[in-house]
Length: 168
Image (cartoon, rainbow, N blue to C red; front, top):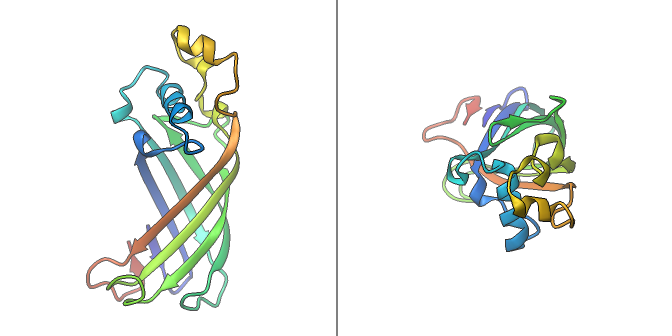
């Protein structure tokens, strides 16, 4: 994450291993999602779920410990595949600025974001694109819905010695 504090804007890039994604906190759904995400063409350990948010602008004022709502757009890549129509996803959330000493020894941003109406099939994450008899059987029942919501929760801290306008 890079933040320009003077302009109240920033950008972010996030990459998480496929194995860290949980679907409805259910082992079976999570396992099926993992099979479909790789389409059995890639080792799950080599697969990542990536998000790129090129611009986030916050309205003033930014006050410590007060949530500030934001709306932005970002693009996902799942196991190297982007959305079929190459359109971004709408992202809504809040940012809370936590001064040094509030949550650890560094300045921190707590970010909570939500992507609603995320359609996994637009990324080829589906049993239709996955070979094998198990995938054929999985097509018969809605084990994992085609559309859902992604919640992103993270803390971003300032690098050591960062007191300037930018932080990562």
